Length: 590
Image (cartoon, rainbow, N blue to C red):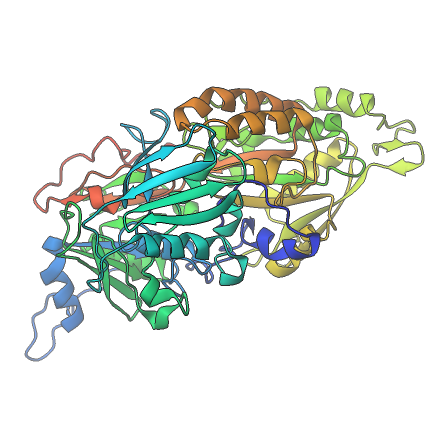
């Protein structure tokens, strides 16, 4: 999904596509990918059947035999959805990004995790295709010196022309890189100073531009000039190249002429298996090394299955993602911060995570936490307090004067429309809402709100938010660690879905943009967290923490920004010992 960025002044009529790129209606499999895998079921192992001329052991076809033969040097990763395409600039899905960004296509600089991974400190920038960079004193120009020995997979040397083309393409709304151009709106011009030097000129100083550039793949001008699809060719500078994509398997092979340090793993396969039970059974037989996300309803039984616990540890990718209620803040009742704070006090976040999200999410008070969208210390968790919430509603003038348990202010009822996206799975006959959504509706109704709810398809969902036809809407935000929050928090921000305006928050966002070092933004993030709690522009509910499995033979996995750097991994086929510190032991707890 799109990474939030510096404010772009997008016309209201153009918001639908932008909003669709950054929000997912809860219970949808994702706005960018095919439907999720089928619900968990236990796959029974069948007894081998002897056939004439064949062993009584489990029958393996030629493909399975090849898989087993290549296992010592191949990392195999389970995909629950198959990417539509592998172009990194054209509406890439989560799996497109995981396959291509880093392994196949690289960026000028990388945003690396702290030692110890997310939560151990702020991230930091490290050289990528640019060996050095410097920022002019006025903060309006950044000079990048390119690595001199870089070549693309087709043998052509990378030059400043390729970098200029890639950055200009990424920030051009007409070139379909819709997830990138909002990040780069403060770039005024990209200049070639020499074959190995590029200057990026800004319209105003913005420290988040370096973070944005860490998301832009550098493409060869000669291959992608006419079309970002390039006829299906995948030509990057990365340590692996795409050698095949067939039958749901994307195969990457180590590029022998890679300009940097060669990765330890020769081959990587991303394998689409829609049946989650089949995938777990395949992992048990040694055919997968990484299953990023188990089916929540059957966690942790899946991880404790015989033959799994001995070969796998639990890994939590902890993506910088959250569920939230967006509130229409430019009209009653949510134009009053007291009403918005009241809604926050009415929600039982802990119960939501424990009872309905299978302990695979953490209750959070806002978008600030270590390794979160705004990287910084997390504020204290608000406790559900209907009494305090009621006092806030009274102060805002919304009272229950006639004792009918419905609040009003004058002749106006405290009535809202709550918008939900379609569910991935059908409900039992006669049931309109699942337990999670029903809880949110009930919490508001018990406090005196009159709540009507609408369930709509994902396209209608995005359009209704763009047209501001809602009172509250349940969304899931999916972005990047330490990404510029101005676009979705600042007054007039292109993805400020509730149209909430706060001069205090605007001031803090300006201060954050003035800082170039991610470590320097951490202290300011704590101030923003306090302002967020007071203004409550939207109500953050929980941060998903899906649990997956990683084979014990895989070494060096450090979850960061919702994924792991494959280039840091190695395989030790003889090691079935305890997982590394980046994984959890298999247990029945959260």
